[in-house]
Image 1 (tube, protein in one colour):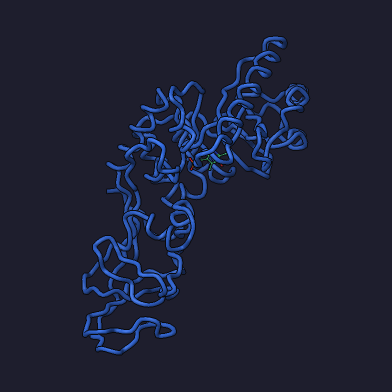
Image 2 (image 1 turned 60 degrees about the vertical axis):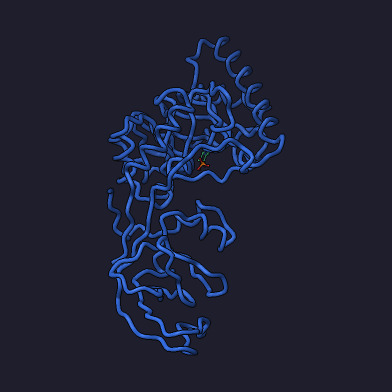
Amino acid sequence: MAKILLNKQNYFHNLKLITKQAGAIEKVAVVLKDNAYGHGILEIASLAKEFGIKNAVVRDLKEAKKVESFFEQILILADTTFHNYSHTFHIAVNSIEQLERVPENTNIHLKIDTGMHRNGISIDSIETAIYGALRKNLNITGIFTHYRAADELSCEFFWQRSNFIQVKKAVLKICEKLFLPIPKFHSANSSALFRFKNFDEDLARVGIACYGYLDTDSCFNNPNLKPVMSLWAKKLSTREIYPKQRIGYGGIYTASEKINSSTYDVGYGDGFFRLNGKKKYLTAKGYEILGRVSMDNCSINSTDEEVCIFDDVRQLAKIHDTITYEITTALKANIPREVI
Ligand SMILES: *Cc1c(COP(=O)(O)O)cnc(C)c1O
């Protein structure tokens, strides 16, 4: 069966660079949402704990429960069930209405909309939100925002960042007035973290950089990250293909010489997006995927028992006109993961 190998050395290498940039390991929150971007949430959570990471970010309560024992604090970004929160969990509150639905005594991080206009409480409503949270006995343990363009060369990042600095000032003033404990302030994802000269926030929510990628504009001084995941497939069968014979659905690939072609057990049913045969794709070792990818297999000009389909998804992201995030996240949870 196909399998995903997770390179522990590369993961730790990335975490070292991230920790150095953040200034302290306590400031690093590893983002494990969506099965750790397809890498396997339990495997990655366990490695993160081994490295000494204390904070994690997940999508919903189901994911949070899976990794509860690995971390001291877990931020849940988009939960919609609103019940039974453990004290390890901190719930992101995305609107004033949501405050009403969170059970009493829950830890919350208020998400502030500083310009992305996707989620979050407007800057004008911060005071209302804080008073609302206090009325419901909620513990405001964090205040955060998210950038819409931290990965692009433009002034947008600086504009949102200065908005967040204003938010921080306003919140600190209210906390002082009401004798509230100071919450953690955080705004940075991977690309934003690496744009800070001196990172001075309480937490960085780092996803893609942990896994070895940063889709940030190449003009930035990007760190030397290493991809963690590689996808491997097993050989199903081999045949000789003669000149002018065509391979696979639609017969898109035509052999120009005699070749050995084998089928391998990975396809779009595993979340390996369908290559349509129009753009050439080479595997890690330089073999070519011949013609279209099928649901459960693909043809490759190799006879090896096992082929590494990729150990870096940037080429695939380009071919599919998408971002590295989508390529890794699409891989199905039922593919076995193995840490090496
Ligand atoms: C996914 C996500 C992140 C992580 O982003 P990366 O670009 O992968 O580092 C951080 N914050 C929020 C709110 C997110 O949804």
